Length: 319
Image (cartoon, rainbow, N blue to C red; front, side, top):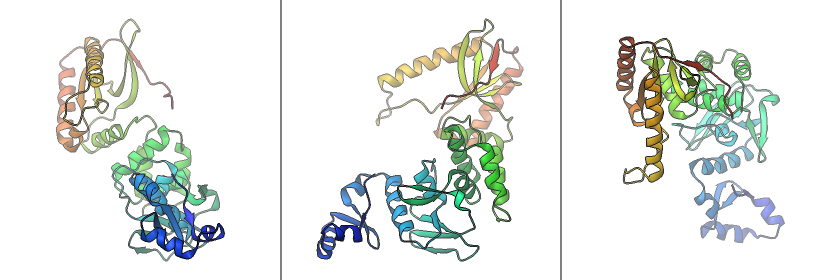
């Protein structure tokens, strides 16, 4: 990310006020906020998260003392997942109990926080990871909150204890119950957005809660696979199939064809060991009832078959 240009700094370095106006008028610089600019080439080359980060840094720089970036804006700067979170508005929190406001492109929350809950990123004050995860969990849909928290836990950016402490510090916040429910469901073993969404789907469809990222072995002790979801009491393995990449015309590339072949061999080995394997894709998550139907059919099929042979183990995941 390119450096934000401050008007006062530019003037000290010999750029004149008329030159600044010309740079903006001709499109060489993009004005982010009063007295703050970025080279337009850098801004245009950035993705949505990058452009949000520019606007967020500019907004907090021009904010009152004691203000910090929060919610989705903090998530962007902290490197958290932002699946389904709108990136138009910059979110800030002022350290006080009242006076929240909203303006086009800017949401100012009012909530008490300690300085130990603030970190500095590229010169910007940002609420730290645990606080940001619970703030989001209190204000966004459950599914999106779980996605954020799972990724933060999986990558080691936060611990379960830190999230629990952050919930306790919310006091009588009206979203505390929502945040607590989401935090209790977050899991450091979800390896992708799709896997997190799949776990939420299982809860909503009242399916058995699976173990995640489990190593499965055959009767001789040979490792067969690490599977996404294991319903061990039911003899069913669930696989979120989000790994295969296709060309824009929808045809699998040679690499993808190789992945498909390896996945078939892997699945055949699991079936020989007596497991029923149920697969679904990113597109299938849009029709959760269909995914639930497949899993229930898999459970029914397994009940008619013998128990799987071999063993399984839940082992620490590498980060």
